[in-house]
Length: 178
Image (cartoon, rainbow, N blue to C red; front, top):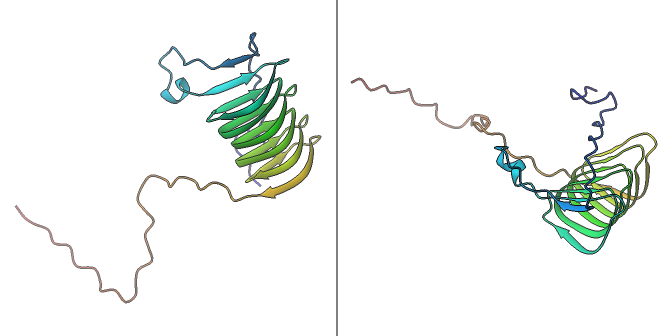
């Protein structure tokens, strides 16, 4: 099996570099002041710092949730969930991708990819399109593999259909002279 460049031989992507933990605990990422790409400047991200607890309610439309402390919520319509080794998530999460190095207890639906690192502990109801588990990780509960989200159609011409054997032959091209 061939692996992507930059991936170890296991095929599991390397763990993301740890982000600096904010000094105030919870922060919302501020828009970038430089001429960075629009997508990066408008990214909606929430970081729950080490020693911070967030409970009750729901978080929705968050592009990236990074957990270093303890979170007890429902996470809906998010793109990425990252749980650091010190992080604990209890509740429900519906996301595109998740990378778990800490603890997750509840129901998780990862429409694209779910990675459980060697220090990760995942328990509950697990639904995902792709599951990658490093050696040493703990996974328990009910696991259901789902169909991956449909990929966007590549830009360019549509694939040619097979010719109809009953169709008339194509007309000869006509070139106008000027």
